Image (cartoon, rainbow, N blue to C red):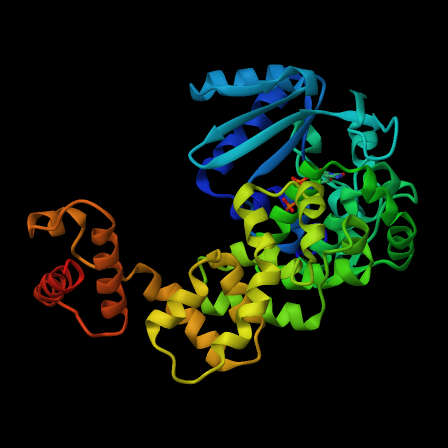
Length: 419
Ligand code: CTP
């Protein structure tokens, strides 16, 4: 963490990519010139104090953020994407996004509803936020430039490594904060404060009020973490997974398997996270789970296959198995669910066969196609499919490799099978 009194803005600029640096600098100048007050807020201030690189920046303006965004966009000859109903606008430069928001206070008409928003001061804006570590701001304007605003003790909590909600109704207002708390705790190696932990346990039932789409979004953000297993384990300990759906389960074995999935198949691992969370799902729970967490179609299919894929494990334990037999056993199922089995199984025989299938066998197809067989004199009909299938089996089992091998085999099969 940066020492107290350090020049926060200089540090901020150091941690920003060049495009972000010039955008923030221009906001500071525009705000000072027009007598508006503007602040960098939330996650970027937390990350600045932790010395982490800043990807995007959120700015709160006391006054009209939309006008400031329009002036900034004019200055840069780019477009500001405006959301007048929320008083927000986004200005992009290269891949850097700057969000400008009108300072606001919020009230929640009922738990889980999106808040009603009214214009407010920076102080009220910070106090409506989720955790003290996210409720700090750095002033960009005039003589207060570089000043840290920390009305809820966020800097002290950062130093102590504590995730602390600002009031006891926080999770009732917005239960997605439960998932956020676990994510920050795991990401930074912090601890959820004891009151905050008690409020989460007490109010986790309010997760019921959160829509599937919002829950889904929080899981996507969790899966993007470097080690989502830490966060998922914590959500399980807090009883939050069960509160979302009883078929979502996670324990230290699953956590280990999640890491194994990444080692086995770095690019595909993320697709295994849902089936891994649903590894105990029963067939009759699939539909309710899929709708509760708003799964996409392929994700639902990967979960529907879980009970069936668990059942094929015992067919893959033999040491010697032909590749064609492996393909026959596993190919009816989605790759995501197979990868999950590979990561969950205790048998290296099972794991090796699935990995061999995912990395190589599933892409091993004959070079010849139906047209080639027609050109060789075959007549249209089911025979062509049968011959191609037999060639694939031979190829999987290493009996043919070149095009010439395939052609010889095709000629023989066409002769034999058309007799
Ligand atoms: N926020 C909140 N309650 C929520 C969501 C967000 O109070 N349910 C506030 C927090 O102050 C947070 C800010 O809005 O810092 C921006 O939210 P978001 O972009 O989701 O988070 P970041 O803090 O930027 O964190 P991350 O690094 O995870 O993106």
